[in-house]
Length: 310
Image (cartoon, rainbow, N blue to C red; front, side, top):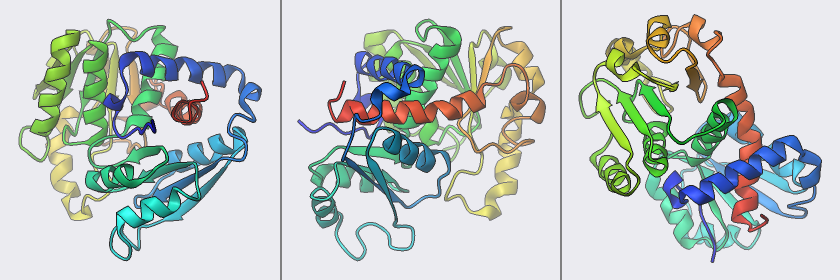
């Protein structure tokens, strides 16, 4: 059966751990995997801009012995000139893995529905599973565990990264606080809250949405933030959003209120003076560049998992 990765909960906890463990071995012994996907092709559709995602997937596929093809669809949206159904069926006859970075969740769902090869969600407006798997790997690398930790997210709750972090916290039975402004434009969608609640019933996770940054940071092992101006948000909304999110900026006071060995994460790009201060992102608690590097090792692991090369 063809497996896809559209959101983190397409995997169970055991599978997440398998991908993380394989990523650790890939990072330690890259030469061992240099022919693992020899003569395989990764086709990447990009509707949204990318730096880390594109480079890590292209480099990763090259280092696994395959090739990656970048295909920009930003000027010709999916389904406009050719149906997504036809496109998915055609590229399935050329490539071995299809990855897409798009604006709308329905587009990635439709690609997965009609493709006969594994489909990877490189980001849409509902999920960012590759990033979250890399985050989990980085947390384990730094904390030597994932279970039993408290994760606190600050900023935009109406956000793909936030959603998949919440799902991951539920999957692992973690405690997680999402500190964000009130209002439907800033808080998680109800469908996500219900999904997280249902998973948490079985795992014992405690995932909360708060509007008090200081309360959210108490006893935190991991503090995480993301851009206030995600791709697709009009620039004219920047002033309004900065005002709304500033009470949730990760600054020195937030860091000092958490545990003494707290780690700070941001999936990047980061705007100093916005979602975090320069002192935080450049400080001793920050692991953002290790987090970014680990995208490479985890992307490799994801592709090997979906191609049943474990």
